[in-house]
Structures are given as C-alpha cells and as structure tokens.
Image 1: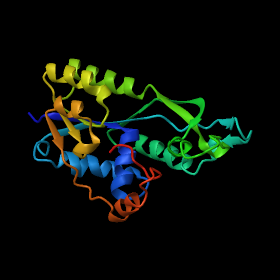
Image 2 (image 1 turned 180 degrees about the vertical axis):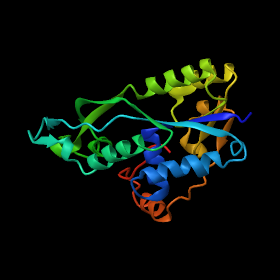
Image 3 (image 1 turned 120 degrees about the vertical axis):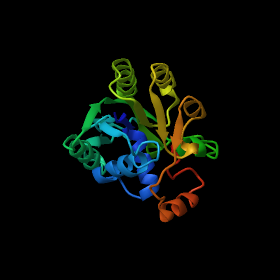
Length: 233
C-alpha cells in the first residue's frame, strides 16, 4: 500500500520564500510547483500518494485607519498587494486537492517601523514623523489551525507523512506530537530560514529545487540599512 502524504503550507512563509526565490509575488502555479517538484519528486516522497495540500493564511485587512500623527486616513483595501493576496487565495481554493484554512488579520493601531527605530538614535531632536509610523497587524488563528490539523491528522492516521513548509518554532510541540503518533515529519526550505529547534524535531529537511532569482539577491545586498526584505526564509 502506498504511503499517503499531506503538505501544510504556512501562507506567509511560503509567499516570502517564493518572492525571495522568484523575485515576484507568487501565483497559484508557483505554489503548486513547489509542492510537485520540491516536495513530491524528492526520493523520500516520489512513491507516496499526495492526499491533500493545506494552505493557511489570513485574508488581507480591508479597513481604514488614521495615522495618529498626520491624521491622514489610510485605506488598506486600496493597497497594491491587496488584489494579489485575495486572488491568490481564491484561485488556490478551486485547485484540486487543495484546502484553504483562513485566519484573521487584526489591526492593532500603529507602531514605529524598523527603519524609524534604526534612525531614531541618529536624530538629534528625537522627533518622530508621520512616515515613521507603520500599521501594526497581528495574524490570528493561522498557527492554531495548523497545530489542530497536525494533531487531527496524526490521531486519525489520515496520512503517513507530513510535510510542513514553515520556519516557525511555535510548531515544535505539534510536530513532536505527530512523530510520537508514528508520522514522519519533513520540512521544506533553506536551513537558515528554519529555526534550529524546528529542524531538531523533524525527520528531514528537504532542500529547495526552485532556483533563487539572482537579480533579487543582488537587490537585497544593496540595502544594508534593512530596507530590503529580511524576514525568513
């Protein structure tokens, strides 16, 4: 009997992972491609049957809020990436053997951005400008849904292999539970983009096959002030 595998995609991590490698916002085909090529074509998985792909993300925030310093009303629904994120989730929802798990994005006021914090010490007057503030968003329910699904799949023995595409150490208890229940747990991603603790409790880390975009790597090296993307992976 062929072993069954499920793939769990942490949407926020996957989008950063693919943007870093492709140099563009990912399309549904890009996400399905890493599932097929980077994961299911691996020697450990090519004889396994893919049962389902689970994609976890929070839809973008579409409300408005005023910058507390300038008083300017910001319409987050008009943000350039709003349509891209909505289209991505909607399109994936209609793909065969793909299930979408939606969390929520909560707006918790405003905070100083990274560059503002870095530059604040350089300002002799210590004043904060309106452009120094960025919206403070908190993602709710995504990690919880991933953890619950890992536990449910493990207990019910719905699959034999779990492939988690995330770098968050918060999932350590969940994958430890899955392994105790007899599942094999694999991770996907560059080692530096996955927490050491998460790697320690996985059976294997699959190396990416999707090539990195040279132009994007070059652009990142030109931004030592932190203005480029420096999140994992």
